[in-house]
Length: 308
Ligand SMILES: Nc1nc2c(ncn2[C@@H]2O[C@H](COP(=O)(O)OP(=O)(O)OP(=O)(O)O)[C@@H](O)[C@H]2O)c(=O)[nH]1
Ligand SMILES: [Mg+2]
Image 1: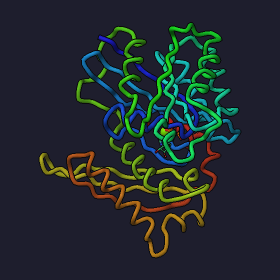
Image 2 (image 1 turned 135 degrees about the vertical axis):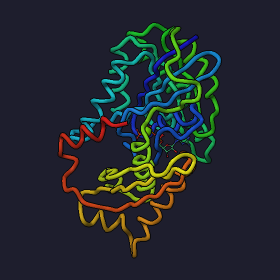
Image 3 (image 1 turned 60 degrees about the horizontal axis):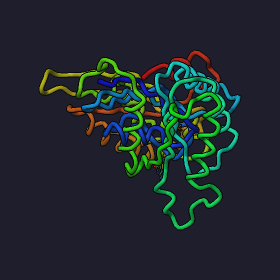
Image 4 (image 1 turned 90 degrees about the horizontal axis):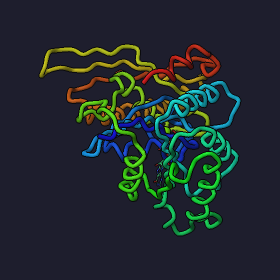
């Protein structure tokens, strides 16, 4: 059987997490319109008759000197360096800017086989698509840059829509073609190996990101203060006490909202999703607190990005 770790790479918001979720058939990694949503290496498992692919989602590759961004770039680079197979996700609606060129430089310096997913092809059907680039010219540009080191047979380019699933079958064909023979790494029914506490914290973070704007999504992290499983099967109940942590009192005010409206909406949305994932009732106690300048605190950052 075929068996491989597949490391995703690409700019922020290119659709890496959406694609993993589409392939694995489950919500494995959180998604938002805000760039730099993913902050951890998150695994999603896809198993079928040809074999098993273990996808590793990564933070979007973003050029910035800020401490958090530097740490995120570092974990993406390490994951790419260690990769068995790379799935490089490119937003076909965006011109390849400085970041895309840096990623190409980085990817073409290694000799790992690469499958390029030209993503968001569904957007080409919008009334006013970006006319300055075509799928063909973008594909050629990427192939040309990756071919510096890679032999032609080590790069495949596939057009997909992570949102609709169009092209995902062809993408899987290309990945199974490149994947080595090996042993199955996870049982058939496992689609992710994230622990309960991390998954819950990510769901809360997604619901908060999707209800805030500008700097607030980047200024948040989630702290699970307590998590307890009470009762005995089949009457177990999960009890969670969590904090949405922000950098300032004004951000705290935004997250709480007028008369607590915003935090209640975040909590309700998070509870709905948590309920759909775990087979037991969940009680969530969610509050907001401030940790000034947390994005400059090295140990805290390392702890946050190394969970999962
Ligand atoms: N139209 C369209 N939108 C997509 C597609 N894939 C992803 N998106 C949207 O693009 C945005 C970013 O998606 P994510 O999956 O969070 O992107 P990401 O690459 O994981 O982003 P980071 O974690 O920030 O690096 C979201 O609003 C998605 O809904 C697609 O195939 N078509
Ligand atoms: Mg992501």
